[in-house]
Amino acid sequence: MRELANLKFCAIVPVYRHESTTRKVAEGLSALGLSVILVDDGNTPEGHAILEQVTREVPDTILVTHAKNGGKGKAVVSGLEKAFELGYTHALQVDADGQHDMASIPFFLKAARKHPEDLIAGFPQYDASVPKAREQGRKITNFWVAIETLSRDIPDSMCGFRIYPVASTWPVAKKLTSYRMGFDIEILVKLSWAGIKMRFYPIKVIYPEGGISNFKVFGSNVEISWTHTKLCTGMILRLPKLLWRRLKAKK
Ligand SMILES: Nc1nc2c(ncn2[C@@H]2O[C@H](COP(=O)(O)OP(=O)(O)OP(=O)(O)O)[C@@H](O)[C@H]2O)c(=O)[nH]1
Ligand SMILES: [Mg+2]
Image 1 (spheres, rainbow, N blue to C red):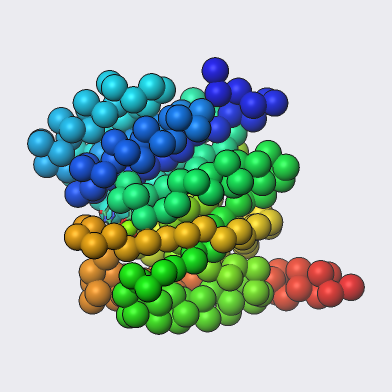
Image 2: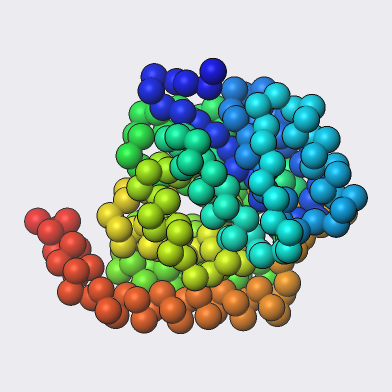
């Protein structure tokens, strides 16, 4: 089951304080023929019980549990480890809060089947519900990412909706250092350094009224700034290689 022309797809859903919206997300993914890896990132016992029930009731769903909250990045890395162990070739990362438009998934899966070596990433299309500060933060991050990769290859690095080619992603993912909100950025920059090609397609992202966000205006932004500091240092160390790659691309 779930074998598509030798490619094996799963979805990884990191869950923290979003247990009430996870069922709908898991059901939607399963209905699309995806195996689902839920990662309980240190939720309350009540939250954990809900996730166990979802795992029992939604077909082809498994649960990976962290005893303590480790951050979104840690949760996705655990999901990638599981996907690698189980032999999945591709893993869709999607949030548990229902912000990402599930109707776009077939399009993204098709793109991954067409370009199985590449990373297929969401380029967020917001409606009026997006907090202005978050939009600004994204622009700043995109500016730094262009410097860190010496390219315009990553037009958005913060959207948590993307399909990873597992075999080439796992060796990079297991060595990451940003476990919280810096994760989405760090993994894309480091995959770009590793030479993984990225393709971006639009995905609608909403901020539902009453939705729970774990993004902390101060703490998460400080953490993201630290991620950029580390990535800028990494870029300087790789400068000859990255410049050479740029030169070759221009020829
Ligand atoms: N922030 C955060 N999210 C976690 C953590 N562990 C798992 N997650 C999951 O990671 C995904 C992203 O978290 P959100 O709180 O929605 O963060 P976000 O989507 O970047 O921020 P918003 O755009 O404000 O929703 C969700 O599926 C969370 O349930 C954690 O420790 N912190
Ligand atoms: Mg969210």
